[in-house]
Structure formats: structure tokens, C-alpha cells
Figure 1 (cartoon, rainbow, N blue to C red):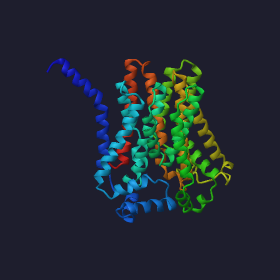
Figure 2 (cartoon, rainbow, N blue to C red):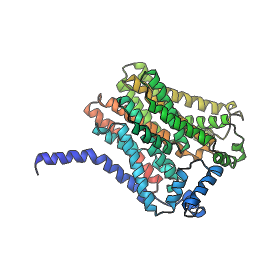
Figure 3 (cartoon, rainbow, N blue to C red):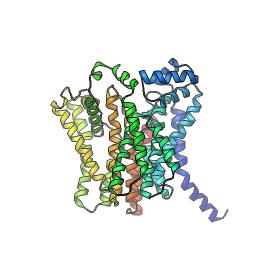
Length: 452
């Protein structure tokens, strides 16, 4: 074997290794972690293997009495009555498709190092949260819409590349938006994201109609979910406390629990995001004020979630933060009369405002930096939907998955922004830092999926 051929093979292995590693990781999670649980078993018990005629009746009944997800729920029910290997293969491909989509958004094809960055970032994605009420039901409800969500955001990338779009693009993006927006949180995320891009393109005097198309489909989906008879019936069947909440109470509950989650709940994505934000701010900015400002979120997180959590558990009780996180006190009940809740919400609001300010300064391209802010706002508003769920917010960790993915994409974009300015040793240290977070994410998912 010639040296040239050997080098080509090594280069080829280097190029494709991240994809191979992720698909193996993906398959291990599914093959060794899968188990029948709660919602899966309930649906198998109460829903017989459907014929087309029976399924149409079930969809109609479900829309009137339970849920507006007319695409997601039937798909899950059909899969539950097939060999589990059918669902497993499709779900492995869906999760792998999310990884490929993120790689595409981060332009990994032209930057091989970004494939490894994408791999490390996606290892931190809390996949195990999408399995907590039954693998089949939960993954079809959360992972599959996420796959279509990622595809629906491709036009945002093409906008910055100034690519011309064909009529075929409008057709298949409309289909992917409809598929993704059948999940309530995704419909809101796409609605806010596309509205932000419409304003952005208008301000920059480069109008792109595809954002209008996606916005219309997403906003129609939001209205469809909001006025769904089944969603209202399900909400009214919950505890009397939740039935008495007004629309403003629900929005307030969803927003405040989302804002406080970053500081008052131990998660991996938030500290990872903060650290990368600081590195990005120091590498891109020469302004000392912006650099100091980037340290504020890190200090706030360390004090509140680190030192503060220990002190609160010691003197106030381990369940003290749950009072803030669960959102079990409504706006109409005067929850803002309580100083501790007010302080928590104000601190969290300041935290996210500062994060948006810092993110806006971590790109050398001022136009692109606004995309980071739009992504954060879209992710936050997608989680507001949880306020309409009618159950204790502490049970809805999985509703943060879409915000987590938004932060992962931003971390990838910031990495690309700072990579050129890093020395060889600096790049090695940066990748080592990402690898440390990825190890934690890997074990978190493996333990969460009961692989270990």
C-alpha cells in the first residue's frame, strides 16, 4: 500500500468518524436502553391495532377529548402495534437525522473540525428526557418533530448564504413545518423564529418570502392548537387549581418557570452555554466592558445554582426551589406579593437579558449576531406553552428540549466564530473543554436511559 493511499484512508476515516461515533451512540441508547413504560403500555392496552376506519374515528375522538396532535398521536399508536424494531430503526434514524441537520446548519461539510464540535455538543443533548413517559410515545412526540424542526430552519442558513430558492423548496419546507408544528412547542418556536427573520430581512432590505410562508403555516398551527377542543377538555380535566387559570396566568406560569429554570435547576446545557459564551466574548471582543459583561451570567449561575443552592437547601429546605420552579401559584393569586418569588424572577430575567446582550456581541458579523438573539427568544417562547399544560411544571423537563437545541446551535455558531482566532494549543484546550462536558452528557443520557 502506497503512502498516498494510506493517507487518503486516514483522512477519509477522520472525515467520517464523527458520524460513525454518533450512530453507534444513538443505536446503543435505543437497543440497550429501551423498555416498555407508562404511556406505551397504556396505549397498547386501551387502543386495539387500528384499521384505517377505526383510526379516523380515534383521531376525531382524540381531537375532541384529548389532543390536537392529529399527526403525532396516530403515528405513535400505529407503531405501538408493529414490531418494536420498526419504531427503533426509524427513531435511530430520526435522532441521527437531527445530528446531520445540526451539522448542516453549522456548515460541517466545509469545515471538518465542526463535525467533531457538533458531535460533542449533541452528546450533551438530554435525549433521555424524551423517553421518560414511554419510549415510543415520547420520542415520536418530541424527537420526530425536532427532526422536522431542524429541516424547517434550513432557509435561515440559506438566507445568510444568499442562496436562490426554487418553488420546490417552498413546497417541502411547508410540509416539514406542518409536520414539526403538530407539536405545540415547535409551532410557537417556528412562529417566533420566522417572525424574527421577517423583521430581520425587512430591516436589512433583503426580503425573502419563504419566511412569510413558514410563518403563516406555523401561526395557523399555533391557532389550531390554542382553539383545539381536545386541548381545552384535557386542561379542564386537571386539578381545579389549573382549571381556574386565565390565559394571562398560563402565559405567566410558562414564562416565569422557563426563565427561572436556567438558574434554579441543575442542568448541563446552561453552564456549558455560559462557559462558551464567555470564551466567545473574550475572543471576539476587544471592548473590556463587553468582556466584563460576559462574566455576569457565569457569576449569577455560580452564586444562585451553586453556592446559593447549597445554602438554601441547608437553611430553607431541599424543596424550597420547587416552589419557584413548579409555578404552582398564579398571577391572579398575587404571587408577586412574595419577595422570594419576585427576587427569583427578577434575577432570572436579568440573567437572560444579559445573555442576549453578550450573545449579540460574540459575532464579528453584526447581522449574524442578531440571529443568536432570535434563536434564544424563540427557544424561550417555545417553553411558554408548558403553562397551558395544566399540570405541575416540575414534571415537564422534556419541554425544555427545544430550548436546549437552540442553545446547542448557538454554541456551534460561536465556536465557528472564534475558531480562526485560536492557536493550535488553544484549539486543543477548547476541544478538551467540550469533551469534558460531552462526557458528562454521555453518562447523563446513558444513566437516564438505563443503559448503565
